[in-house]
Every structure is written in structure tokens, then in C-alpha cells.
Amino acid sequence: MTDASVGATFTALSDPTRRQLVGMIAERGSVTASEVARELPITRQAVAKHLAVLHDAGLAVPARAGRETRYALEPSGLVDAAAWMTQVGAEWDVRLRRLQEHAASADRRAG
Amino acid sequence: MTDASVGATFTALSDPTRRQLVGMIAERGSVTASEVARELPITRQAVAKHLAVLHDAGLAVPARAGRETRYALEPSGLVDAAAWMTQVGAEWDVRLRRLQEHAASADRRAG
DNA sequence: ACACTTTGCAACCATTGAGTTGCGGATCAT
DNA sequence: ATGATCCGCAACTCAATGGTTGCAAAGTGT
Image (cartoon, rainbow over all chains, first blue to last red; front, side, top):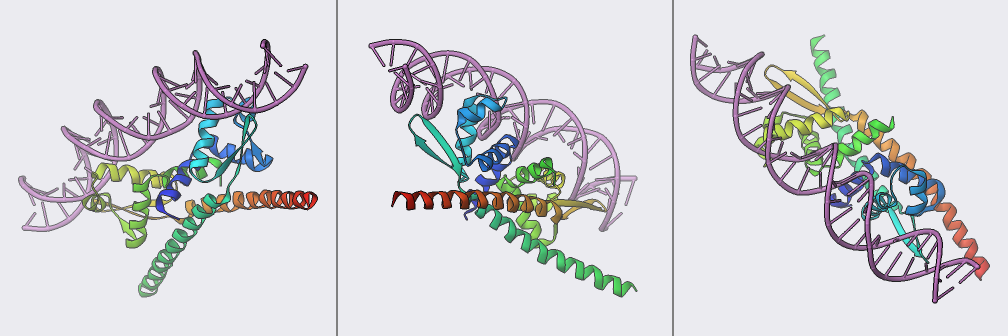
């Protein structure tokens, strides 16, 4: 759960086309660049680049079968990023609770 | 939890400087651009831009007090993004479980 | 063997984004 | 009142990136 891997995950998910792509892979189980390119208004190479980014982020894994390369989902990257967010969220929560308590006690003092 | 807001959150968290900034705000409760700029190797304006991005993403909220503008954390943006990830993660989970079952039954068929 | 499909690599273009400098306006302290 | 901070806005540079086209290599079907 290194900072670089978390960053790569957020970078990968920051692009709307890539999020859509993730959704399509989740629906279908696996996908090739050519398949997706037929349905989206972008070229196959653009899709291939997006799939490469998802792969580098550990969110998708390619498997070559004959002349086609199918990409499936790889959950570990998402799990790591979700863990990071949960952890950071917990820290925020602690901090915010302190602030709320502080504000509440200030209110009490103010009557 | 619109797609645009989720995208803004991921975009905000995809930058390492911004993640560091989030950590600093979490530690201190609140922060000004000038304060942070003294400790980081970037200018105040760069920090101000980052804080603006965090604000637009709903992750930080500014409060002007006199001549300084302090930024504190705003949890809603993070909560939304975390919810998105949890949801997508659950879908992946379902899909992966299906695939595993499929693979297992294939194994059984193969003997 | 040959036509067809699928992929991968490289070069290129346009846009975004992180960072800078410069300046003017508002606030605080003396 | 004036000097010192602090902020916000605007213009600029430079690298990263989403997208394109072109082409060669490898797999498939007849």
C-alpha cells in the first residue's frame, strides 16, 4: 500500500473514460481494446492506452489468447486505495470529532 | 454522489502534493497557503491552487479570518468517493466470485 | 498461400495542469 | 499614516496526457 501505488490508482480512476471502461469490464468480465473501441467514440489505440494505465495501476490484468488480448479486473489495486481512503477518513473523523467537541464545549461556556 | 463529483475527488487525490497537503491539514486541523508554502519547496500560489482544487472537490473548506484564509477538512467528498469505491469493489467482488466458481467447476469437469 | 483481423509501436497534435512571476488590494501593527 | 503581511487575479512556461494517424508483425480462416 505504498504512496506511489495509491497515487497510480487515483490517477487511473480520475479519468471519466477510464471509469466507464472499468464499469464495462465489471459488467462483462473481460474486454479487448477492439471490442470497446467499436462502442466508444474513440480509437482502439486510445482504449489500449487506457487499459495500459489501468494495468499499471494494478486495476486490470491482461491475458493474451491467440491474437486477442483480454483485460480482466484485478481487485488488489482498488482494495489498497479503498484502504487508504478508509484510513485517511478515520483520521479525519478523529480530528473532526475533536473539533466538534471543542465547539460544543465552547458553546457550553458561551451558555 | 454524482460521477462528476467522484471524478473531482479522484482528480484531487491523484496529485502527490495534494495528498501531502491533505495529510498536513489532517494533522493540524487547519492551514493557510502561506504557512504551507514556507515548509514546502513550492510557492504560495501553487499551494493556493491546490487548496482551491481540494475545495472544488469538496474535500476542504475555506474560512476567512481577518487577512488570512484557513482551510479545514470537509469529509463529505471523501465519504462519497469511498462509497463509490466500496460499491464498485462489491460489484467486482461479485463478478470475481462468479469467475472463481466458474473456474472451479471447470476444474471439476476437467477432473 | 492469401486475405482478414487483432495487436503493438512510434510519431505527432492539442489540451490540461503544475508551477512560476508580477502586481494590486485588503488587513494588521506600530 | 505607513510599513509589513497576507491574499487573490492574471499571464506565462513547460511537461504530462488524451487523442490521433500510420505501419509492421503476428494469429486465424479458407
